[in-house]
Length: 384
Image: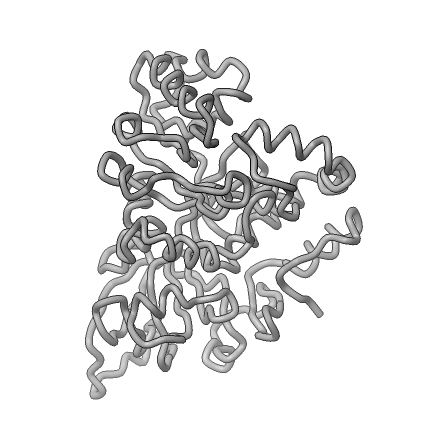
C-alpha cells in the first residue's frame, strides 16, 4: 500500500509505502514512477502522524456520563460523593455486562484515532479487540483504595513490569503525604508510573519512571491539575484520557485543553501521545513514522496551516484513515472508491457529526446490544 501526498509533521509532503505491516519507505514523490503491484491511496491537504497512545483509561467505564457536583479535595472525596448522589445512574450502567462496556471502551478509543490504549485495572475480556490493549503492567488503584497494596507492590514473584497507580490525586495534605507513603513502601524500588500526580512535587516526581497527565479529569474533579512544567524536569510526562466518568470522550478536546495550559510545548504534548509513550511502555517499533517501524498511523484532514496547529485542530470527524500495523481499521467514506481491495463486509457504517465512516467490526450491533440494557445510553456516533 502507498499513501500519496500526505503532510508529515515538520517533514513536508511525502508518500509512505507500507508492506507486511511496516513502513518500508518514506519518500518525495516521483511522478514518473508507479508501482502497479501496490494499492494506491491519494490524499489532498491531509496530515499523517502516528496512531495515538492513550496511557490511561478504564475501558469498562466509558458509558458513564461525567459525574460530580462540585470541586473535591481528593479522589476519595469525589468517589464517596458519586455513590451517594448517583446511585441510579451508576446502577444502570453497571447493569450492562462488563464485556459490552469494555468493547465500547475500545471503540471510543478507536474513533478518536487511538491505536494503543493502556488499560488500568483488573484484566478484562478483550477478545477481537479493534485496537491494541496494553496490559503489560501491574495496576494498583491507589494507596487509599487498593487492598494489600504494600504486599502487591513488593511481591517477589511478580513479573518485571512497571507498577501503574493513581497517586497524588487531590489538592490536600493527604494527597501529598500519600505519595511519600508509596515511596517509603516501595522496598524493592519497583518502576513506578504515577497517574494524575496533582499533589506531586519535583522531588517526589524523580522517583517515578513517568507520570500520566490527565488534565481534563483533574480540572473536572479537583479544579486544578499537576505542576507539569516543574515535574517534567524530573520525570517523563505521558498523556491519558481517563474514562468518561470524569472526562470528555473526545481526546482531541482534551489535548486542546492541555495545550491551552502551556505546561508542555507542542512537541512535548505530541510526544506524550506518541514516541515518548511508546518508549516508556516499551512498545517496540511504534510511536514514530519511520522506515522499519510498524504502520500504526492516522491520516486526517488538515484544517489549519502549520503542522502542529493542524494536529491540535483535529476532531474525530476529520479522521480519514487509521492503520494498525498496516491493516485498515477505520476510513472515511470518501476513500471507498479507492479501497476496492478490502472486504467491505468486515466493516460497519457509522456517522460522526454527519460524516460517514467505516469501522472494523460490528459497532452498530454493539450499540444496539448495549441499549437493550440501558435504553437511555448516549453515544458520540450515530448508526443507521
